Length: 252
Image 1: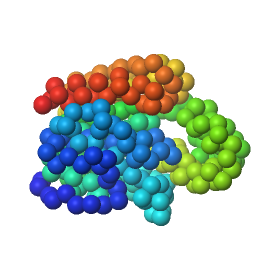
Image 2: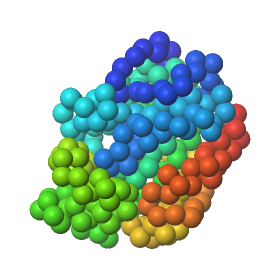
Image 3: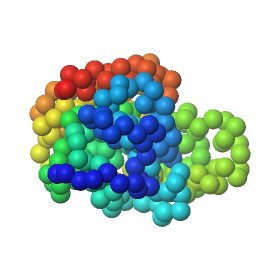
């Protein structure tokens, strides 16, 4: 598939690099935006072009309606990244982004006949494992906010700012609706590597729920536990990216 790269509001490239050999699409956690990955190009070799995806309701997609179902979301993402699939690519997703990455990869395989070189999943249980925690998307505001606080990813000064939280509430509810209403369906395992990263202090998922990702590929699988909680992506970035670089260079 050969297409010409064009600008659209879904794909952001902090440091555009047409000479790169690989594009790395990145999907953030619930409530997160493409800015989560804005510094990643500083830590990756020039052979890898970082392309964070901006989901509706945030950043330059602020005015677009929010998605509350997985399949319509990944279908829209696939359509918008299709101009960027003219060279080898990999996909990274953290938490909600991990599950979206998985379903996006399935759709790219079935509808576009394309697969990534590597799928990187961080802080997300394997999709076929029955969730052990109850849904939170439909909880009353006070209880919903407490659940969000338990993830330990939102600064206290933000949580105490009523105006800011009013802006985030619809986004977070939509994202958790995507997660909590997701229904897994069986499909053949992938034939490319999957690397999974977990936080040693993350209370959200057990080792088993992370290790179960191995069932989703017939190619090499790895699980790396990193010091930190659910948002180790922020404080252990260097360790995480070292593994990403190694995996992609091994392919090259």
